[in-house]
Length: 181
Image (tube, rainbow, N blue to C red; front, top):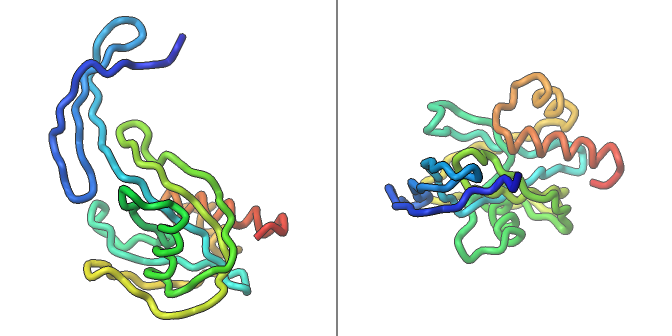
């Protein structure tokens, strides 16, 4: 098995400010054809940001698709031309008002590979300086500090629903345990 699909044709169904939606016809490896709905997304960044006291910085913000306030690690969308590392530093400053001197790159994840091509680039860092938030005009969020051990408990018992945040909490806890963060 080659585990591939060949795109035969497609059309763009929607082109918005952030996403595009495509409907593609593909040939499966057994020769049959199928349809694939694909959400095209520019990607994003997120970071586990820790204080010197091993508190992790989170943001609470209303997420319209879920109609509720969600606890998340600071994150943001990539601009088409933007380097993920520079985007992370920008988002960190905008959302938390903090900066860091050193970052650990934690790789990338595919949050919803069944229908979306979004790639999230993950980082971890320690706060080096504190300042003011510089939120976008349509951005409303509250920064919270949660002790890393408490955040780990929250991730493990299902209190944190956001997938990228669960991953970052687990990785940050391991990195601190190993003396790497």
